[in-house]
Image (cartoon, rainbow, N blue to C red; front, top):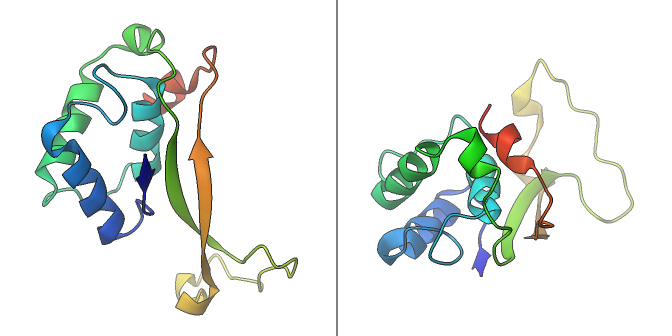
Length: 129
């Protein structure tokens, strides 16, 4: 499965559409892939208009950390990421932490990553904190 960056409205809409007729991102039961995608959303994601994502988040958060630690790895999911800088070997320009407007749109470069978790990975407890 492939998702656009979850930092964009397009990515959230794509995930919401994917979850329209599914309870989980990958397969028929919760997996660590679900927890990883949830972590990609971040704690401040604006999800009001994405009812399927909201349902999915509520469902995942209903599992205890102990239950989550037993989730299987799940099928890999590809998620585009947006990062500052690029893979050109040229370091990104200095950006002031005090001035978030210092990052221009021209400096945002898409990055394609594949999430695949080993069976013994314990990202679950990190995501539930």
